Image (cartoon, rainbow, N blue to C red; front, side, top):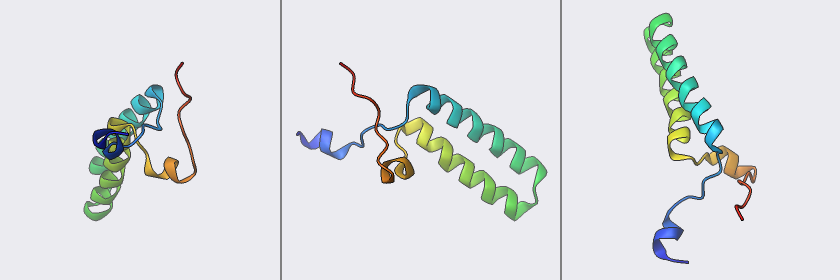
Length: 74
């Protein structure tokens, strides 16, 4: 195993779910900043953007904790 491959996380979020995560994160961020009070709005927006980041990267630490893996391509 090369150093570069060891340094990168193995993707565990499929492509369709990555798109859904990013769309949901953008929607929740927009709604929370417009409808919630200052502290709650920023808190929910930060959580949503963290969720969206997992979609951009393709790796979810919570999914890795429970052992989720993508099927191997042949």
